[in-house]
Amino acid sequence: MTGEVHVGNAEVDGPSRRGWLVGHFMEPDDPRHETGVEVKWGAHPAGEERPEWVAAESRSALILLVEGRFTVELPSRRVRLERRGDYVLFRGVPHTWRAEEDSVLVVVRWPSLEGYGAGGPELPVA
Image (cartoon, rainbow, N blue to C red):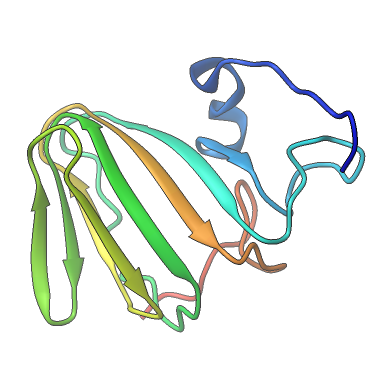
């Protein structure tokens, strides 16, 4: 990539793709189109949750708390992100989550794979 620049605001750009700002799901001529990584600005109101488990996960993910309180459920443990900067990183692990308070997160997943969408089909669920 040479000389490409995109300037935006995550709270404006994100909602149409569930907060995802970078990934394979962006148009190929968009500087945010990327197959190596996905980046999300996650703004989740208190009580929002992913009721079903993400299954058959092969990617890595980093979930970093900006503000709020957010719980990530993994098969072997529950991780509560409570302090600004708390994070959890996992690879190929099923998961689900719940916003305990209004929460803002930065989520990074890699790689960005076809079939894993930002507004369309998502991972299979258990």
